[in-house]
Image 1: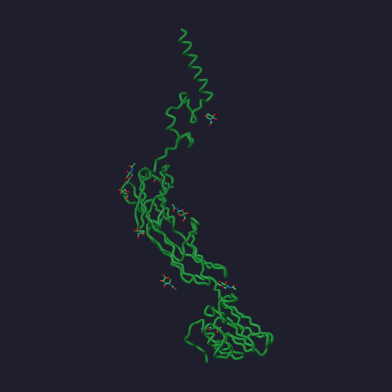
Image 2: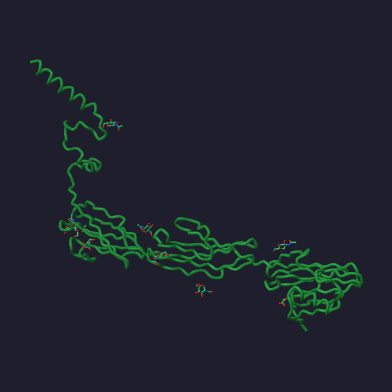
Length: 362
Ligand SMILES: *[C@@H]1O[C@H](CO)[C@@H](O)[C@H](O)[C@H]1NC(C)=O
Ligand SMILES: *[C@@H]1O[C@H](CO)[C@@H](O)[C@H](O)[C@H]1NC(C)=O
Ligand SMILES: *[C@@H]1O[C@H](CO)[C@@H](O)[C@H](O)[C@H]1NC(C)=O
Ligand SMILES: *[C@@H]1O[C@H](CO)[C@@H](O)[C@H](O)[C@H]1NC(C)=O
Ligand SMILES: *[C@@H]1O[C@H](CO)[C@@H](O)[C@H](O)[C@H]1NC(C)=O
Ligand SMILES: *[C@@H]1O[C@H](CO)[C@@H](O)[C@H](O)[C@H]1NC(C)=O
Ligand SMILES: *[C@@H]1O[C@H](CO)[C@@H](O)[C@H](O)[C@H]1NC(C)=O
Ligand SMILES: *[C@@H]1O[C@H](CO)[C@@H](O)[C@H](O)[C@H]1NC(C)=O
Ligand SMILES: *[C@@H]1O[C@H](CO)[C@@H](O)[C@H](O)[C@H]1NC(C)=O
């Protein structure tokens, strides 16, 4: 039979002891006091706890109690819990062993030793520790840019784990002062990626879990370039767009949509699209438009396929590109790119000066 008495919690063990005649009736209440000389025993959940108690007289009356019940009275086991047993390595030891400790075992335990002359109690406070464990974390989510997002991470453990959040990529940013709930207001595309929740206490290694946040945004074209092509050769017009979800591409020549036919082929993959002109002819030159679309928007850019004339003597590319900076060719071109005057030009100028000098003299 397990004793369950309705009484003030602190008084209860005292009452139980009285019932067992382990306490002299005249003893003042103060003499059994949990707060005085309590030893703390810290055990991890699942481990075995041994609550030590020693007696100095074999004939003493002994008992183990917890907050609400007698566990052992002498050699008699009152508790029905199979995990509980006495640990007696000598006749003078009266320790209590609790196997597979769980959180509900936490609390005060009393070893009561009564001899003919006095009653001694030793109080033990059992602390049960539990490693941190994340029990629930938000599922991966996809939101539109500008949304308010709240990520949740619930963790258990004893002591209560400290929860921290981190944005893994691309910023690797830590969030200060956030706990179970991470609020991201007005989310931007840069804030998409994996978020890591870490639950830590001093008991064991931290538990870590991740949640992926995908932020949708409309396309913006990040790369497109007009190119020169040679008649009879292949030409590739490229267009790259940044978007989430990945964009669909369309190509237009002037105002006409291009399909993959008649020597034209559109190759789109991920955030890139290439318009391949297999064999460039006269009518392929001109104005093209690349259109990138996803469910949040559409954008376009124009690019040109220019005709490149193969000169009999090829002009170096560098000279061609900067040709508009040299308005004239020949000896008149004296000012070089860097503003200095070349030696040849200096001689040329000196010759002219000399010529004018001679005229003036005449
Ligand atoms: C036992 O732990 C409590 C808090 O958990 C603490 O206040 C007290 O000082 C500890 N007692 C001893 C003897 O370590
Ligand atoms: C201590 O008391 C509680 C409440 O009655 C009980 O659930 C628990 O099993 C007891 N602990 C031991 C070790 O007997
Ligand atoms: C996890 O949390 C979400 C939101 O708070 C809730 O809907 C869900 O039921 C929870 N799952 C579990 C296993 O607790
Ligand atoms: C996000 O939260 C802010 C501040 O609470 C609020 O002003 C705003 O309207 C919210 N935005 C959305 C899209 O709910
Ligand atoms: C490209 O087209 C021209 C004219 O139609 C043709 O003569 C030439 O053989 C073609 N070249 C290739 C590589 O197909
Ligand atoms: C396009 O995709 C590639 C590979 O997925 C990525 O490395 C690149 O940054 C993306 N470019 C843009 C502009 O999103
Ligand atoms: C190229 O075509 C686009 C779409 O038709 C047009 O908006 C743009 O003005 C054109 N560019 C030129 C230089 O003609
Ligand atoms: C490109 O965008 C402009 C303005 O944003 C629009 O007027 C035009 O119709 C678009 N062109 C195509 C081919 O979608
Ligand atoms: C400037 O140009 C001249 C001739 O083109 C060259 O010799 C000289 O090294 C250049 N100086 C610098 C600083 O680039």
